[in-house]
Image (cartoon, rainbow, N blue to C red; front, side, top):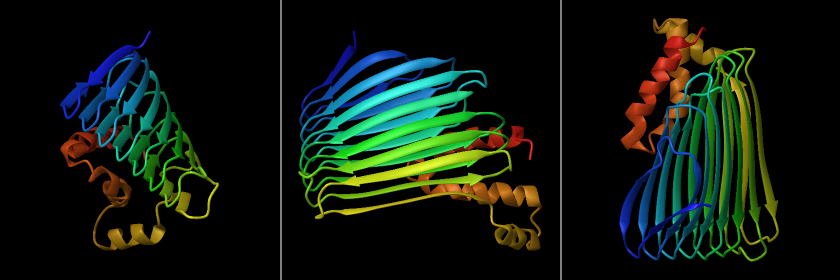
Length: 267
């Protein structure tokens, strides 16, 4: 049975899920504001969350996964957004052997908004699997989903993104972007953004890529006296910076984790 967490009308609360497993049902009343912190650095775990946002409520969720090399992590989140509610989500997947995340977001009410920003950084034989589905059901709903990742060694990532705009979601606006930078020849990425649109009075777009570091950019930095390995690190870090900078409160911690991964990476 899921553990219930209720946030009262106009209440502000911070909830720490760091290291927790199990089932949770979270409900934000009208005008409530909640920040959920989920810093996973321990052993394997299985976390399931069902979240309902009341009218004019706001949820900020920060998930940083930096578990041990032999750990497996599975996270499932289902979120329902009513009128004028907002979800601001940031996810950094850095650790673990296998990390799997499933997210389903329903923008049900008029004017509901989703801002989803994700990064991942894999080395050695790490594998990341992510399935994000966003359903625009109410009019004037808005979503921006941005995923950027680095893969080195023989690490791999499968990212499936779906945005469906229902007939009822008039004047909705969405953009889904999934991009990966491959640092080594053995790294593999499958980026699969999909749009399903059932009415014409909307704005929608998507983009995806899995590419290598530009040789021209490397040459330019080397011509400035920067060694090749350092130049590659700078370019790769810059690739993620635009996403990390959106959550300045946690940027230094994430960059510290990433520096350790760069130190351990066998380029």
